Amino acid sequence: MKILVLDGFALNPGDLSWKGLTELGTVVVYDRTEQARIISRIGDADVVVVNKCPISRETIEACPNLKLICVTATGYNTIDLEAAKEHGILVCNVPTYATESVTQHVFAMLLAIANHISEHAQSVKAGEWQKAADFSYRKFPIFELAGQTMGIIGMGRIGRSVATVAKAFGMKVLCYSKHTAPELEDEQLKFVSFDELLEQSDIISLLCPLTEETEQMICKKTIAKMKQGVIIINTARGDIINEMDLANALANGKVGYAAIDVLAEEPPVHGSQLIEQSRCLVTPHIAWAPLQARRRCMQIVEENIRSFQQGKPQNLISL
Image (tube, rainbow, N blue to C red; front, top):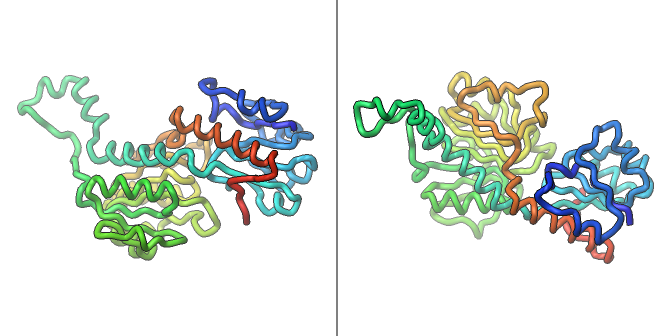
């Protein structure tokens, strides 16, 4: 079986091993693949392993030997699922590898806003504490998470994990999801309508997949329904937010802060209005990327291919 890795560098920049894949077939690994070379590189491969390279209908139709598309991520919006289904190609993803990592990143960004650790540490290094009149000073407002209301959009594994940590901080949690889970409700956590979440949340964390329903979900219209000074955190997909509308809301103060790990264009070679906003933290899509998470991802990819070879495919994505 020929296994082709189109864009392996993000998953494995050299601190992991492809050895597990080589035990499953003949493996060719490319660090990156330009869109114009995707078809020629796939060629007669049976399995393509891909993270962000788009697998379009054109590609699927040009690669008749392709049997399995193995996405090294949870999201799969770069795959033409309809075309894959029409051609009998299975598509699988890695749904559970980064739950802890993304949860950690959500709160790392939120705490960076709440406590302004970096700004205060830089102030001390610049000599401001040494010259201060008092034993303590604050260059920015600091607030507690306890008592705040966090709205979580998307209650899959990551959403539930974020909710658990939010509750541990003493936060009230409001959840909006395609599928509700009444058994999770208690004094701190409630499922509510989308509008209720927008209107009542101090902090909104986006943890839903990118679909036709969620694309541009956060826009001028929905931001207008939010609290003045709301904090928006996006560790899901960039296109869930209308970046221009969010930038405008940051500029006029409707949104107090934003913490963004994903953009509509990655890398943002044409720039982004969000990067230019002083009250917007932008990280380069790293919520998923700790070594431990990437190792789990690699292992699940191997298991996905092995299960496919054994006639028992797992983690399948269906329309």
